[in-house]
Length: 371
Ligand code: NAP
Image (tube, rainbow, N blue to C red; front, side, top):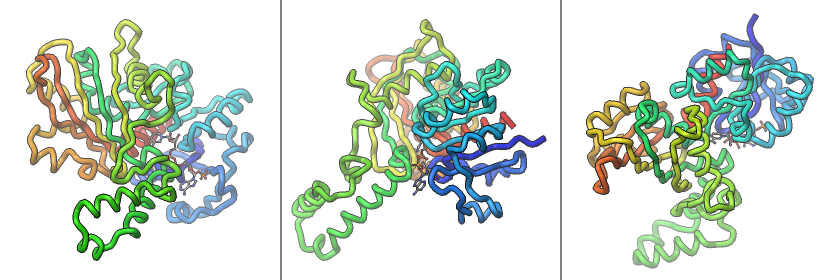
């Protein structure tokens, strides 16, 4: 009998990329499905209507409806997870819970899913009866796919990173706000003004507009356009942001590394104005001196999505920008070189679409495992 899958949070950024992928890969033929909403209960959603007739939205908080499902796949967010997950488990629901939100990632009862990296662990946990599977943090998943070969061959002593994370990481509201910021600047500038003023007068004017109290910044708190934000997620009150903390914690959990083998990973996470691709710059200390060609070979052979970009200006500009990667599953890794500080130190720069491999694709693949 076909399993019944309930989708919650499918209307958001991650959820709609997930639906797009499921439709493209024709996965819907393999299971029965029900769509839920926290805000549009009873609606016959116009977007869904393009693909499925009469899919009226059910109440995502109705435990009686949820209890009937074999699998719940939610991209709604941690607030929803916390409100529903524990109640459902408490009333005896034994189905599979697949989640994009971060809160359950830290729990012992959950597995963080990124099957090109931890497929064996996922299979083992299914055999053990684990029922809760959570997608990883976007930068963690993208780093692991990029450097999977080095991790799996146990070549990394430590990593220091700097990230350049897209607006989409903050959800649909964040993207819409970035666009509103562009419109706000655009309204206040015009061709004649630019043609008639000196470059310093134009610069001063733009800076003043960006600092206006009515500049749209409800989500980002400070302007993102023509700016950057060197803090993502909560303050852990030890100088580190929660986003930075996730890099080491989640990586070691995904790789199932115990205390003794744990890899130290730390750095700075920064929000920039790109749309939906996260970029990351890595400083890696290897456990031994390996020549560059071998390093590239180890990275390239780990999975079919990773691609080495030759370390020169032309290739980097053509293939190593958020715009060149957006909307694809590719994980280009470039700027690989030995650093002058020592022969075990290398740099690398990688980019990935954080809504695909960074969020939706591991969930879609997990759903297929379960089906
Ligand atoms: P989002 O775009 O803000 O969507 C979340 C929910 O907001 C939707 O499912 C929808 O729920 C509601 N919503 C209200 N107004 C909306 C509008 N105008 N358009 C679309 N949806 C609207 O959030 P998200 O970025 O997809 O993130 C969802 C979860 O995934 C979060 O826990 C996040 O931390 C996690 N995550 C996100 C990313 C990322 O890159 N964004 C990556 C990995 C994990 P209803 O239909 O019920 O109203």
